[in-house]
Amino acid sequence: MRVFVTGGAGFIGSHLADRLVARGDDVVLLDNLQTGRRENIAHLIEPGAVEFVEGSVLDRGLVRELCSGADVVVHLASAVGVRLVIERPLESLLGNVRGADIVSEAATEAGARLLFASTSEIYGKVSDDCLNEHSDRIVGSPQTARWGYATAKVFGEMLAYGYHRSGGAETIVVRFFNTVGPRQTGTYGMVIPRLVGQALIDENLTVYGDGRQTRCFGHVADAIDAVTGLLDGGPELCGRPFNVGNRNNEISIADLAQRIIDRTGSRSKIRLVPYDEVFGDGFEELGKRKPDTSALRNAIGWEPTRDIDTVIDDVVRHLAVMRDSLPSRLYGSRTRDREPSRELTDEAS
Ligand code: UDP
Image (cartoon, rainbow, N blue to C red; front, side, top):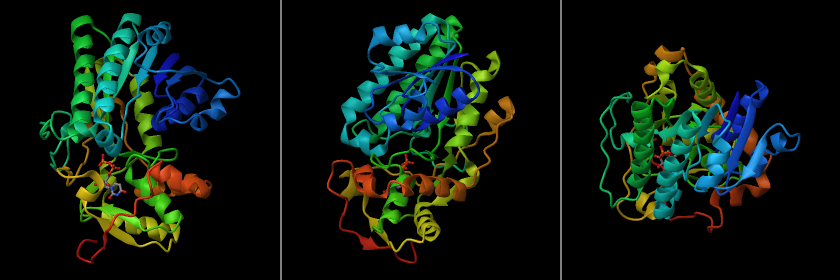
């Protein structure tokens, strides 16, 4: 099978490329290397296991060319990470909207199956026990930058459904819930690589808010099992969204931070940082986000199998060998986050 992956040098894209190459697919990766890294796929480029094209999904001619001849297109390229979305709202919004437009049109023209990467963020502020694919969405004001990302991803989803309904295109939407693993960068948020990185260099772990908010962290290897299952599945999967995440790995961020300190043996402490010091005024947090993944289980028999300790340990192993470069990986070109903060109270943990 010939598979074209946008965002192929990114966190999820590079793991998908590894899996596709291992099973003998013909793989083409496109990435502008803005948040993706060449080092994520160097081991595939050097032996010629993949074709890598450095370029943008906004280059319509290039995307058309790469889609033609592909059996499957996986559109992962996206400005992602709460911090990046808030710091560069227009770039994130336009990149996601235009990228979805260009890639879905080109994939449809080429007659390829399209897998569009969406996000749990589209559910907005709903904190129901488990979110299923039909849950209503509650997003905040369009003046709040955070919701631009959800809005752009919903636009991409609706294009995918539209191409399926109107022309029978084979489009499938995957909504990733807090997917984590090696190669994920903590630069733009992404709590686990950030806190693990801080623990490894004995810096205090920055827990935002009171730390009682919970997330369900899914291992990237489980997510790749889901994606390949969807790529290989029958036509009944098309025109539908599927949640991908791990409801068994629900944990509060304060407990997560403590677990990371324990598993790394770090001397770091936990510091609580108010949201407005990180994101400015008006930031909206989600108390809880938990996926119902029964639709995917019923469709292809998929279930996540990696627990939270496996997720943490795999990130620790990956970051431990790059200790010297961790400050720049965690904080980018910004001065290191040493926001005024207060110690975690027992109540919050
Ligand atoms: N978070 C935190 N410290 C950090 C980065 C993130 O406490 O250094 C929190 C963040 O406020 C959120 C959770 O961790 O409650 C998950 O954040 P992430 O950006 O990984 O994902 P999302 O907010 O999209 O669920």
